[in-house]
Image 1: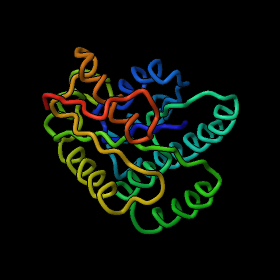
Image 2: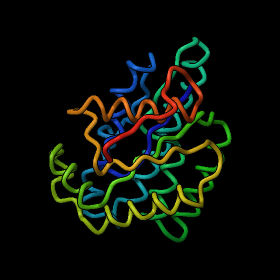
Image 3: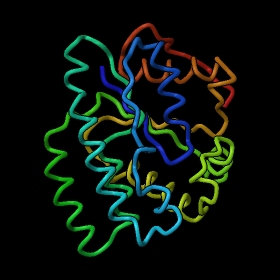
Image 4: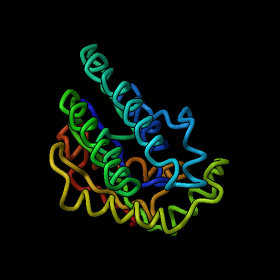
Length: 211
């Protein structure tokens, strides 16, 4: 079983992936982003560094995703905190013209070779909540994060998973009122929703939640 957790910057993808890994007895595939040498410069000047940043991410994510079949063949479940298709979503925001065309020529050739998840869990949150979570984790290169960029990204994610996306099934979970780190009941509820969707027991057919 291969589950991917998706959503905008700051929504809590990696945190949830780590928490769910023990519950599903799953290995973890975590996005490698801090190794991107262009990332800090990109946040300082997106126009100047967008193409370099996206190409680095594209190749890095592709090399990671190539390991998915090997992980599953060993009989283990796998949870990832990103999907390969997120790279294209970011590129549509950050690139244009010939750079975007060049990017998609490479992206489309690589995407054909990769395995799709059995389920994508799309985490939603309001932009103000995303900004609070970004500030709380206090990564150096995110300290001056532009709210307008996060708003655009959040809208792009919503548009993509409400109509443009095709492929793996998607479970949408609004996280505005969830705190699965501090409240185990919230984590129980998310786990139950995933098990229901995948029809993987044990799960409760009626599981009420305060939100």
